Length: 265
Length: 178
Image (cartoon, rainbow over all chains, first blue to last red; front, side, top):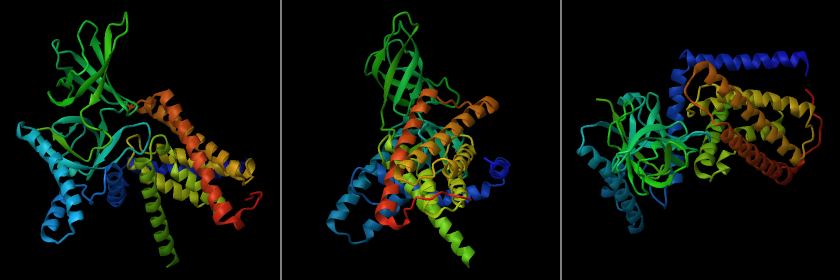
């Protein structure tokens, strides 16, 4: 490789580095926000299509659901389409009602959001939601789905969107307690985006398959009592001070459509 | 007018590629969803048109992907830039053959360089910035190998489709010279 090519390569890489530095100095903020506005609908559309189980209409947000319901009410549709759309409306309604039921019994400040995408690299397990700093969402806010089931925490906040790290991500660590006789305390960690493992439970405490796991409130910004799932298997090794357990989340973490972010009071 | 047309065409191509990337990542089963669409497209496009402007297109596309990455900004752009620069050199000096198996090997090599640079930068940023993110070495090796192999296979298939089936008149064995 000649010196000329090395110099040209160096200039190119220098330009790339300057571009990256511009991001850190904040000069690209408006461009990035504009690009997210363009790309988020594409990501949302593709994500919604890939997690739907049957032929359904374009219901991927609360506003879209409400608008579709009104349109359905006012227009004449052929019976088959109406049936399909009704089924989807019922499903979305059930999802939202579950979350509303959870919040009606608590005093959490919360914001509902639709999932518009998920991680683009294979090394993390995360989702992108369509609410961000504009709705007061902050880092470390817990995120729930269904009837108060913890699915992750907010790790990145943009103006109109946020990234949520799921509980089965490698970097996820949440302090939990087991609803058993010993009220065992441990730490759940994600594994390869597939499994959830609970660790640091003393060997002398009894863990059984089917025991329920909830948040212990010992993590900062994580309230007590958010449901996580059930123990699927217990792993004990001789001469080790702690035992591990495999936890099954109460919701399918790869099929989440609507979540709520619990915000700090 | 031609500049406007070029900008529109580039923008449309970027958006289409983003759509395709989302489709591959979200809908294909593991490990097929690890196919690196942009590097595959860059290599095949360069073999078709032999225009180095694909480098800037790829950099711009990786900027789009950076918006959806949870890791430090710049890792994807820099890694892909180095990988493509190495690709240009390897294509000129080493793998000048444009047979389908050579293209697959080329893509395998490019993705390998990309993953190596990405992993190295990731560990460097963890050392210097203590971002708290960690990368399991074994997991990273496994996912990198999957990405390399599946992207190479997909690249070979796409190359055969384009150069042997759709546009056979484009296929010619030649030595690339600047």
